Length: 436
Image (cartoon, rainbow, N blue to C red):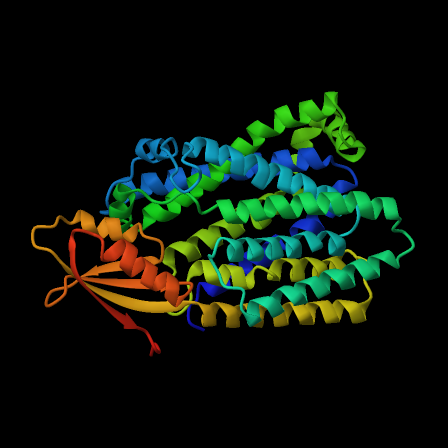
């Protein structure tokens, strides 16, 4: 295995796959809104405290570059050039409301109204939406492997719908209402996936990361903690609006139950399902993902590429554990077919990622007198994963990964050759990497 941190991504997705099992047990006696409230409030506080503890440890017990919590929080108020140039604080609020609150409300209501296997259609729909979005904005090519990957997901969705339509306990109204929530859930999941990484590091942050790798995980912890806590802030005006202006009866009833259950909040918080949901299916997987991201050593594929490849593990696990642990009704032959097809889809996605990406090194000769700021300028370019200083004929070595040859030459011609500080550029394609 190229990178041991792949197991972190796999484990995180398996832990996330237990969410519908835990939530289904709670739905019988606890409001969906209260589950969401407790999950993200407590998880946000825990992640923020972990980040604070890491800052204190870094500043007082290590020789690493000092990290300022004040300066880190100030960064969230700057303009976000990769998200319509709005301030990062508003960017986080949008992610928290649509990517967390509305996303989870849609997910949980789909689970409660229909079933685990039917709700997993939302995950597969979101993967398809993101795939077409990336093709539309030319982030990825829709090659034969990506096309087969999407076809397999569509076929799996068709099998699940066919199976559920044949079950007596499912009426058309439940499937229709559940389907609306699944579409809402899929759309918000897609928004979260597309928007979560659109807050680039500043030049000062890039310098700090190179001096202290811990900064990256602390920044990620604080970012997701703020998204969770901002989500709770946006939850209350939303449920009040729906309470006084009922839009849909299932959601209205859940809000009514929330106000009834709020007096039992501490008793519900101590339930084993809630504790497991918070610690093992929220906090733990995010920490695993952050640790993998920070320590990732990309040979052929990046962290984000492997995350995309392995994302179907969550719906696979949810359907499998639903049948195994809480006796979800799903015919075993169809279950085997779906799991087999989704595993095959992982192989197609892997083939797509390895085939469509261009991995290269670029040697740069810098003009005399150019300041060190050129290094941080280059690191901010899309596709540049590392910049190394050299002694000899060339001054800098860039490791570049792009989606196509066209994107690579666009990077060279539009960003590098036009840079006044660069005198000469030489391109080296990577053919094969040999490792011990």
